[in-house]
Image (cartoon, rainbow, N blue to C red; front, side, top):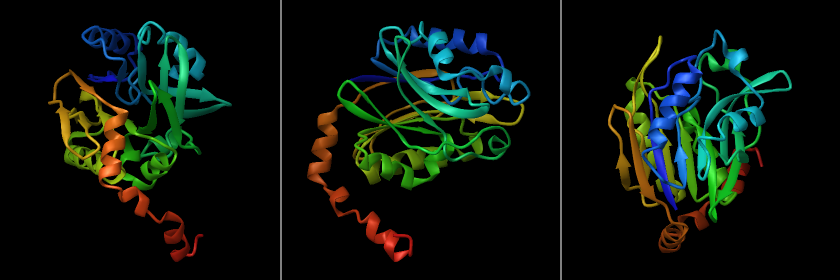
Length: 255
């Protein structure tokens, strides 16, 4: 499967401009899957967040044009049952293929968003995709859970600030190495009222090799991801067979 990472500048609160820029970037690739940054339509515009948040079906319809003939992934502000969620959305031709509400909320997010309570795995072109958002990247237990649910490709959409850029790179590689899977991590670039974003989006192989990496400017990275390569690496180096999560929980008195 051909996959692309569309690293873009996200302008907080300007949905029209963000969608226009996303459309321009997507016009440069014919990849079957395109990953965009965290909250790529709105950014972290807390002042008007509730008015920008919509039910997932409304977001899916609004993004139908961008997702026509391809799968599109990234997070959006979801309104459901009176609550707001930072929700990863995977869709194609307006059809929702999978979604995941961000579990690990960072900083001011906790004042506005509710935390998700379920991990998210979806299927596309015969591959199992694990969905995650930004701060999630620091919690390896989430990715191990996704792996045990069959994930072979981890998707990470993010707005990771420049001072922690090296963490973003190292953690993306670590998640690939420990789970013997692909990781596609899309960061934004530019700046908002609070942070500068250094981009650095990257694609990592199941062996932890960096297949493609962006600089600080807007850029589209393209890579091939193959289920057979995940199977090959996991067979060659069967570390997952030696994992003992239940036993470790018992050792901690939680089993």
